[in-house]
Length: 552
Image (cartoon, rainbow, N blue to C red; front, side, top):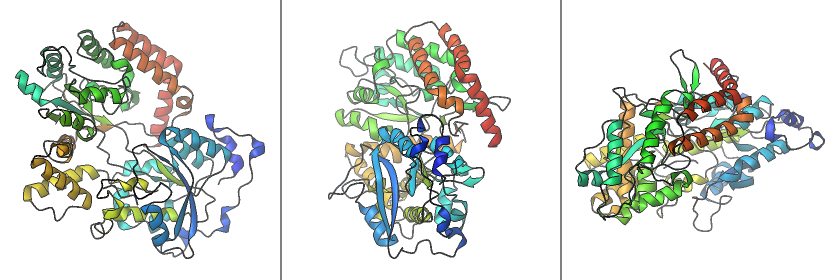
C-alpha cells in the first residue's frame, strides 16, 4: 500500500525554450517572501494543526486509472478531508489535468508566473525554476522537521534523493519509488515449453530457439499458424512491457541509456557497435515470422490483446506484468502458465539489467509561499503509513475493501527504495510460517489473495506471480542478491542540446532501428551513428559528461 498521505516574476523571461510563452509586459513584480518568518529558524511543531486553517494551493496530474467511490473526486477525498481535519490544511488545486496534458499545462503556468504553493514538477522544470530563484530552499526545513521515519525512507536511496538538490541545496522533495521495480524480466509460457518438451532458456541462443519453436511448432495445439515466439511494441526502445531493454542486455548493450565506458566517460548506449549484432538477430527473427509482422504499428494495448488471446509465448517486461498483462491470458485459458526468468546472455558474461533512476516527479514549493513548511507536514503525514505503530489505523489511506487505490489521491508521497521487494519477502515469510500477524495492511492483502489463489481461485494468479513464488520478485531478488543491475548514469535535467535536438534524434533512432529489423540494410546502423553524432549527439555527449563531472 503506497501511503501518500519567487523569484521575481520577471526572471521567468529567462526560462528557455517552449516555456517562454508570455511577453515581459505581462509580468508583475513578486511580493517579497520576507514578510513570512522562516519556519526553519523558529521552534515550530511541524505536525501541529493550523488554527485557523490555512489555504494551500497546488497543481498536479491525474491518470485514467484513478477510481473513486462515494462521490469522491481528486479535489474532495479522504486525503483532502484529512489534511483539513488533522493538519488544518485546506488544499485547493488551481488545476488538475490528465497526465498526457501535464507538461504543456505546467509550462504554460510557469511561463505566466502564476505559481501555487506546491507544484508537481519534472526534472527540467525543477532545474529552471531553481536556477531562476523561484523555489523555496527546503534544506533546513527537511533537516529540522522531517520525522525519523520520513528521513529513513527518503534517504534509503540517497542517489535518488540527491537528484532534488541543486548547488547542494534541497530545492524540492523527490517522489522516490521502488528503485528495482523497473528492471526487465523475461516472461515465458511454461505450459508451451512442457508441450514442446523444451527446457527453460539458459542462454540467448536458447531464447532464439524457443521463440522459433513457439512460432512454428503449434504450441497451442489448434493446428493453425497463429502464434509468435517473441512480442514487441512499436515503441520497443522505451516500453517497459514488450520492450527490448532486456533483450539488448543479453548482448551487453543498452540503447537509450547512458553508461560508463572503460575510461569512465558516459557514452550513449544506442551507438555502441554490439547494437548492430543484436539488431541482426532481430532482423532474422522478423524475416522468419517469429516476430509479429505488424509489431511496428502495434502499441502496448494491441500486443496485450495478443497475449490475452494466447498468441504470444515470450516477452520482456517489468515486475508488474503478471498482474497487468498476463492475468488476462490466464483468465481466458485455464491451462495457461507463465514464469518470470532472469535475463540471459549471448556469451559467458552475465546479462545485466538496466533501469532508470526511479524519480517520476518532484514536489516544489514557490518561494512566495506563506507556509513553505506545509510540504514537510504533508510529507510526514504520508510517511506515517510506513510506521508499524500506526500503520493499521492508517489503512484507510491505502487500498479500500472494494479495491480502490485511494493512496493515489495524496498530494505528497514517496516510497522506500525496495518497498515492493520487501513486501514480497515479508509475504513469503508469512506464507512459510502461516503467520501474517507481522504484515502491513498492504502485505496482508497480498497474503490473502495468494492464499485464495492456492485454494483454487485463478483470479489471483497474478498476485502469486508477483508477490508469491515463483514470481517476478523472485527474479528481482536474484538481481539484488547478486548485485547484478545498473541504472542509467544520466539522470539530470535535459541539457541545452537535448532540449533542442533530442526529440529529433530519438525519432530517427526509432525509425532506423525499426526499418533495420524489418529488413533494411544493417549498414544503415553505421550511418545512423554518424548522423546521430553530427545532428547533436556529439554535443549532447559533451554536455552529459560535463554534468557528470559536476555531480561526482
